[in-house]
Every structure is written in C-alpha cells, then in structure tokens.
Length: 275
View 1 (cartoon, helix red, strand yellow):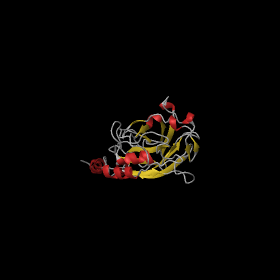
View 2 (view 1 turned 60 degrees about the vertical axis):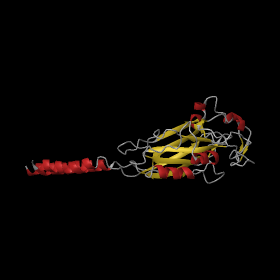
View 3 (view 1 turned 90 degrees about the vertical axis):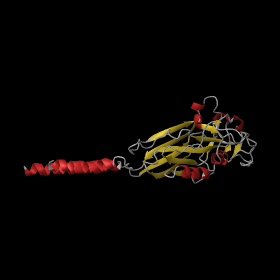
View 4 (view 1 turned 90 degrees about the horizontal axis):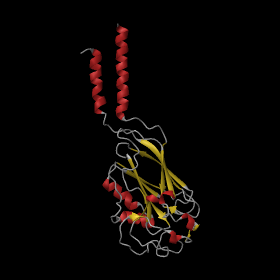
C-alpha cells in the first residue's frame, strides 16, 4: 500500500463513522396566519411540537386526553407541552402567542411568528394544535404525526414551505356539547368552563353555523364566514409558513467528507510536485 492509499484508508474511517451522526442545529421561522376575514373565527395561540415522529396527541374515534380537552375547550396548551416532554424527551415545543395588541387570540388577518433552533436529527417532524374560537371544543390540528417533515433522514432541511389549512383540519374533541349559549369560550357573557359534558370521542368538526350573530370581543360573527360544512376543503382557516432564517448547515458527516477530500487532494499535489 503506497502513502496515498494509506491516507485514503485512514480518512475513510472517521467519514464512515460520522455518516449516521447528528446534523448541526438549524434555526427555522414558524408563522401562523389566520386567513379568515373580519367576522370569522379566531384562533388561540398555536401549540407547535417538533419531534422524531413518535408524538401522537390524539386519535380520531378515541376519547380526548385531558390535555387535548383543555386545549379544545379553553385554549390551554400547558398539558400538551408536558405530554410531549414525557412521551418524547428529545422533542421540543413552543406556543406561538397572539400579537401583543388586542385580545389574546390570533384574529382574522393576523400573523404570529417565532424563531426556534432545532436538532434535525431528533426534531424532524412538526405537529400543531390550536382552538377555534368561539366554540365549545373545536380545534385545528394535524392528526398524522408524520405529515409534516422538516428535515430528511440526513438532517437536511426540506426547504421553505407553506401549509394551507382548511376546515378539513378542524376536529371536535367530543368533550362538550356544541351550544353557543352553553359555555363556549370567547363569547361575551359566557363562562368558557361551564359547558355541558358530551362524553363523546374526537371526530371531524361539525357545523358551527348556530354561532352566527354571537357577540365576541371582536364583534359579531358573520354567518357567511363561519359555516364550513358545505365545502370544508374550500373553507380557509389558517396558513403556516416555515422557512430557514439562516443557512442550514450540512450534516457533520458531510463536513468530514469535504475535509477528507481536501486532504487527499493535498497529498496528491505533493506527490505530483515530488515527481
């Protein structure tokens, strides 16, 4: 084996060993926009989870957990934050709050944004939940924990993208009877914790047309802007935009490979110079 072959053999060891290594942290910007018009529904601060694909907050056809119930009935995401930490210790979460002025909701036309540093190896997938208000227990969410992949298996960011969410992403928690006069959150004169228990299961959201004309802190609900049952796919609820705010670094293995190739090139140049 000549000297160049020895160099190649030695350099191949760390490169191969690092091939499955964890990619360096990446900073992403996550924005949630309420795409409703004035007079439509508002959204509570968005619970955003970044995980390895093993976080499943709910299942259609099953009863809601206490954490999902709290989110769906009053917009409280603290239980989901704790559930994620317990189920997937390597995961990370954030709650994207409403803009500073006005009610503590993301109102029609408003956008809220956070920047977050993620580990592409253990926080590859994105999940979210937010309460639709006013309602008794209707929430916006993704049911499939693998639906939104941020990084591929090598740790590379998949690229900037948007998630357009229609009423097909709305669910009823099955925990409280839908009644505009029976304890819905975000309705003037109503106690959001005083609804009638439904004791049902999570299912696709039902019509909330009965809420038309109900007084909210933002004004009266417009019936033409809240009835999504006729064509749920055409009823726009929100848009989530995800982008990298700085160059996303290559996986560690890629840097070692580049270094190895550079070293091999340097050895080859010295050999040619010595001839």
